[in-house]
Image 1: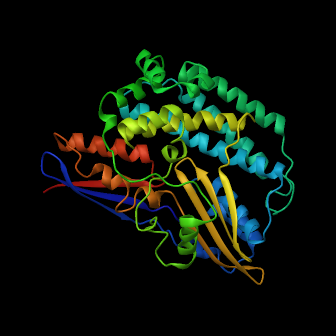
Image 2: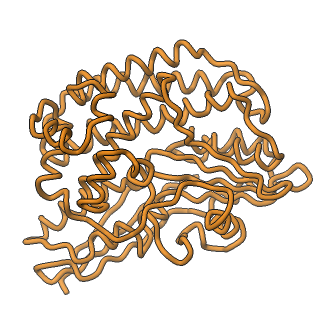
Length: 389
């Protein structure tokens, strides 16, 4: 079964600025219903295979939701193992964008492709080792993992980031204010630094929207309403809203309180350049988690009521929700709410950021569209058409 689908963007502009933006999606957001009627053990086995992207995070979300439905918490060792797996997968996705996609889009030569490929193999291999550990798919079990090997890989990765991506110690980058990071990107010692500078000093200040950033996951308030609607309201997972309003999820929402990101966001809003800066900060924070020197708290679960559980997992692209209802030892209802449905909602940050975008030609507009889409990073492919108003 192909659950991916694609997004289709339709823009109309008058030769000066974009007048309308529309999105059509062929994503099969209700495909999780194929899990209904199955035993939760079978669901936990199938979910990582059912979703081709962020499969590890999807699997962890399924486990945590199942666990929460039974009123259980993960043992500390198990929680660390899951956080490590989720962080490793998110870091691979972040590095893919930073070291391959952004240099290609900006015409910057990147010398890091071989190192990225090696790190991708290593991190995903280690994540696979963890996921094969005894008790991985058993709620309440203590998963024993090679802590030393995992933390050592995280420390080595921090060294790679410092030497080849940032050209400065990651901790120093993370602690720097926006003025210091401005000096960093103007020095331009790496492709990542040069790309960041070009975005902040040019086209990366476009794509701004007034869509509010996603609230941190909680077990009450508006998030409770989102969970209820995800489980019980047909079509909500395809076009979710936050008390009637759109929301932006992803690295910027997660890192909004980071000093330099907060300063850049206050100055420029949620634009392309600020989203890239947030992804960089997120990458360093993830490396800290892998090294055992930080706590990501990217996984949360809630028992909505007996037999009903949900989990939030922060992926590279934003918050992922899995929710389920158990009856008589079987999954009676299963729903998934993915970050793409927030960021590429018909009234969401992608549409609002492009509406009113000025351009001198179709080619300029296509470039703006690509950069904007890459900054928000949909989990499926996309295509577009441009018409004249």
